[in-house]
Length: 282
Ligand code: AMP
Image (cartoon, rainbow, N blue to C red; front, side):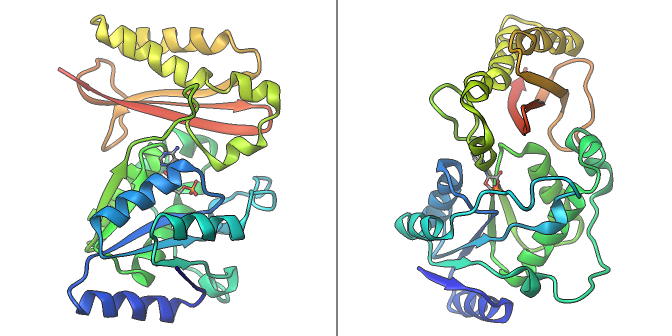
């Protein structure tokens, strides 16, 4: 696996592979790989002739006071892991390479960025959409892989690619979990031992929602109330929101039917955790 630091070189490599008739896949990440990242990479490796993983801790998606400076990093380990799963190129630019000088352009996926996590992180998704648009131009792959773990991000990237006519197929990959149900996340490394024990509360609440839906409950207020009750049993877990909405426009649903996204966000100590499950309801 080769590490690429420059945008021009990266684009040339991808253009050359495509000119030879190859299918190129891109997996955007912020590094500190866990099995969720590796699952995206494995999927890309099995689908594509050439796979580029991007590793860039994007300052534009962190608000002042968030964890940009302390975000976990381990470049050596990341490059070994990506190489082991068969990734061809790791694109790891410096901040100055991605954002030289003053940048006055941003990509805002309006409605979808203003709900759910957007209420708590109002500038976050514009930072994400802008850097992903740049990455789609630097790595003009035919396929791009994103985790369902970040359901709102996935919906926003799908909409952006569609609205702005990026010729890329956006592929969502199922959430990879720890044995106790906690969704894998680089930020799980912030959790103190007692917090780590309680962190599966989010998934427990989603499982409770699943049980209720299974037993015929279709009232979203009832499902939401039952989820709040589950989380309330975990003293260290402070709920931020529960969203029950459609999976494309992220609009709240009163009645559960069709494809329904149930998402939850909470703070556990200084760590912000998110999780979700998509239910296909008759
Ligand atoms: P990040 O490095 O956290 O920005 O994540 C990079 C990509 O990996 C994003 O598309 C995430 O949605 C995805 N991802 C993160 N955690 C998981 C997980 N537990 N399972 C599947 N995909 C994940």
